[in-house]
Length: 597
Image 1: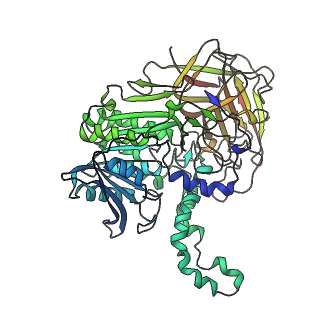
Image 2: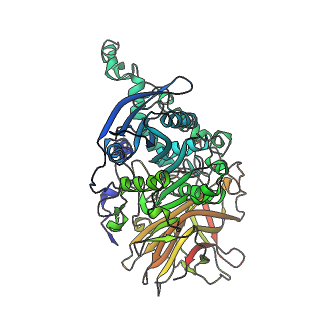
Image 3: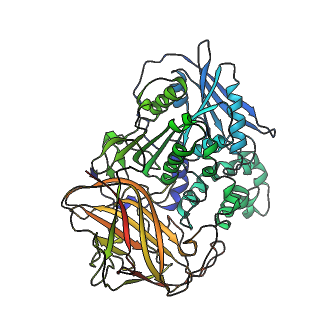
């Protein structure tokens, strides 16, 4: 595994976030490395086809179809990022599919108002059934796409259109509170803000009327008001942004779109794909695990597949570089080829690799190899606690924080001060859409901070594989009525390079449930469980396992102001004294899914 210097490019000016957000969604999350293949069909393209929804709103699609007699399966993608992707449409149509690429409601050429998730069930159902009825369709419909395009698939699926037979959602979520907008009760600020910024460009164009109002603006007086005339307010461009912040609890606002409430009703095959460094990893894995267990029929349960690579929510370079780590060309996913093979299996019954009796394929970092598995999490997992220890204190990498499987005895707790005005900065990880770059980067710049506790194993004497779900069990007290606790795990090589693996957060007032807020009593010790989601990594001999504990990871998560007030409208902040316990009665630890080798 190779890495490149992080340098100054790690932090981008926020002014670039709009461009990055828009460009990120005009490409798929994985490199399109499809090698040319002999085309079976010439392709006919129908551009700008209008499809009327049940409420009269027309959505616009492009259709790519084989120039041949007969009927073919339909592959549908519904996107808010501009439907115009002739490369994928031509590729799939030339290989025997009718491809429909549609702008979702309120985006680009489609009518209506865009509001995330709100219309996707009905619009998805109506479009699937319309596509099934095309004269050159054989009535079988599959869907594909990532990120929000994955959400359009999952939401359409729970509406149960009769002709939807298979889906390919990648890098997407299982619900839109936990793991999309919030994590552990903390608002995912960087993603919510930059994603909204990217979407706002097209919404602003539609609302402001573009150059059609230019002459009107020119005639307005006083002249200094030129830029204000005809432009919409923030509420007009993205009303959902405030709604997301206002609904910081997992309340009924979110539950109407909760995919995980509908698994038992779904009777479709699905290829769920995610990335170990992706912002929606938990949902991608969750969708697979639950549908494999609970889908409506035995055929649907057997028809679930999981594919997880080292990817982040961004394009992978041809060399397999993600973040500043190069995993090798084997890490590059041939996206168009994967779409084709999945639907050849799911809709045409072709016996290819997806017909294998090993439904899970994962990329094991460290070894940097692909491996097939029978299930996820792996049945042979040995969940092992690595306990926190110190003698003098774990503040910064200069401290003596240790990790070991030995249970703690009598130990002095560690303390640090969390100041919301000086938060620990995000360095890579599970991000999206602009600002700080996503993927694995070294955490070394944060290791010298006194408000970061650092716990490490000695150099390992042999390779140690960790594959599956991780968590931190933390016993802590705070001087504040509410605060956050964060955890991050890294793979540290002999040079000190501390490669990000996964992270998590818990907002104290949501420690028991994200449906209700429960303030903490200052000074009282509570047990917190910090969900670190999942990873697959081999810590090589000579490397160290390292855990960082702190109270901020900004701007990935919004700062807890330590006041206990709601996020919406919060502006005052207090410093908090945090105390982390690791003794016999309070055995703080990270729980690792160790795989015997």
